[in-house]
Image 1 (tube, one colour):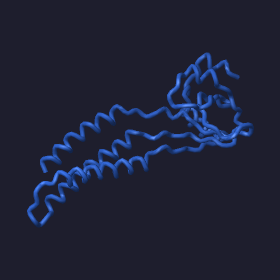
Image 2 (cartoon, one colour):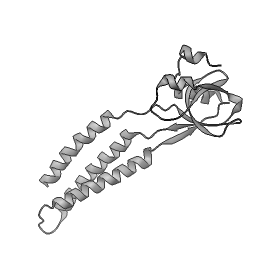
Image 3 (cartoon, one colour):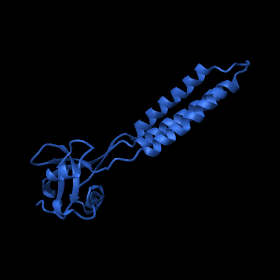
Image 4 (cartoon, one colour):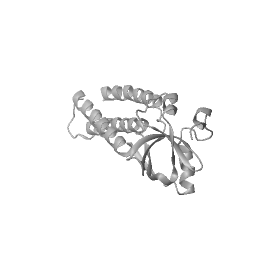
Length: 181
């Protein structure tokens, strides 16, 4: 019991520090199909009155100047499909892992306290209970919070308003982006 308490007390601060340092990734990545090109992934830079300003998606780590250099506009009438790709949220996965560790700790404690015969503490059993809880919690966290998509219709005003919030520049375009016609 004492070792499982010690493992629990060591795991909680470790997971808390990991979860607090994780930040959600910008959700400006979209998958767009048009009449001219096949379906591809893009950064959504801006939503204009009659078009989208996009740049090819290459990696989630980018320098904005390089992205703007490759930007171009796509008129709404050419867009056939459009969906936002929501990246996995590592904070939720870490929370699932933490919940699994906590549940593993309580399962191990329950096993120790409900046995009819007097049992001696088994550190291997404690580690297995806590590790299996962590693995199960991680899997559940990933299953529920892995990358998902949201579909938009650019012909609907309410979807265009939502797309404004998805775009990297949702309030005002910088001068170098405003030059792109």
